[in-house]
Length: 474
Ligand SMILES: NC(=O)c1ccc[n+]([C@@H]2O[C@H](COP(=O)([O-])OP(=O)(O)OC[C@H]3O[C@@H](n4cnc5c(N)ncnc54)[C@H](O)[C@@H]3O)[C@@H](O)[C@H]2O)c1
Image 1 (cartoon, rainbow, N blue to C red):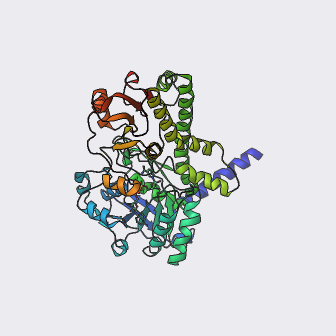
Image 2: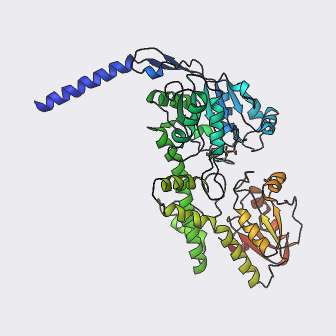
Image 3: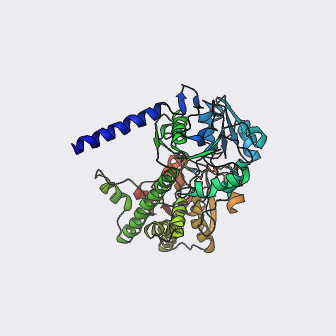
């Protein structure tokens, strides 16, 4: 009898909830090419009464590796403005040039509903703002939220009542609502979750990867209220064919993103440590990894330098937050230390091989093959190849850097390096294959040996050449 009463109680509550749902104060109407949100006043959710979005007008703030592909996808469905403070970037994009090489001129020009802007006046009539500005670390490996803070303060001057701000930049759990939203409130006079709303939808694109594109990667979404979360999820559902995963809160979505890259960083750190151990044991690391990889659940990570704007940076966002709340992360920081030291390890290995061949490192001509942080991508940010170059320079070696993907001016302004366009034949005592660009694979052993002096060392960080053709590899 008691059980029966409990079940009837549950059933009645279920009916009431369903009734509330169907008399909901707004209905979300998804049409093929437009998302419509309409509010009606029922009094259940008075804080939502200000929302009256009939047709999303989107502005993407920050048109880098993440923002531009996103703006292009949204621009296929909705009126979209791509906004950036970099006027040169805007001028190039208007001319159909994407210097990140993620999109072709044809792809840019085929997006009929996308325009580009660097003036606030041009974005004031948008009702959805998506923030994709950088989230770097400072020289002490602490999160540098300056671009995010500036973008949030700027947004306060353009948003109106009822607008939604969605953050995509990678941050630590809590940053959106603890750092960004208060700035918008403070500078706009609007109240969060009453006058304006927010969401967080982390980006998972992989620059240089032509297979995993923005619309075929499942996207995590979240919103500042259940209704806004639904809306944001359906908005992204318009462009993401792979589907979306709606997280239960903004903090959950923020945490999910930062651990994706932290997990990857740690997995690579483990393999880097194994490579150091196997090199001492005189066992080839790749052969071990291939043998272990024959087991169904052995993960296919490879050793290497860990640089770039994400994997080597994001874990510090998480460790910063952990330390702020009194927990000192040990495993994550140990992984970071191992990965950050791989440049020094490679340099020492090359110097040892040179010495064994009686080639003096002082005045040796050393060719660095690859400067970008990863293969087939022009991104030079936080490349750890610089650790190898700078260490070799302290030994007074003569360094030539050859990278068909890197922009020479950027290499010069960011790192003070001059790139060689074509390495000289017969010039080099050592070549270090630091990045596995397709061009280096195409050169093959013959093409690379042509550049070397008769006595030389070839060190392969990225397994570009067969094992028997190189003097050393990770
Ligand atoms: N690059 C990746 O592979 C990747 C992948 C997933 C997530 N993310 C995250 O996405 C975010 C953006 O990364 P990215 O690689 O696209 O950066 P990026 O440096 O390529 O581009 C950022 C753009 O934002 C612009 N910008 C900076 N401050 C601005 C402001 N206040 N207002 C308007 N524009 C501004 C810059 O001029 C630049 O064009 C970061 O948080 C990053 O961690 C990056």
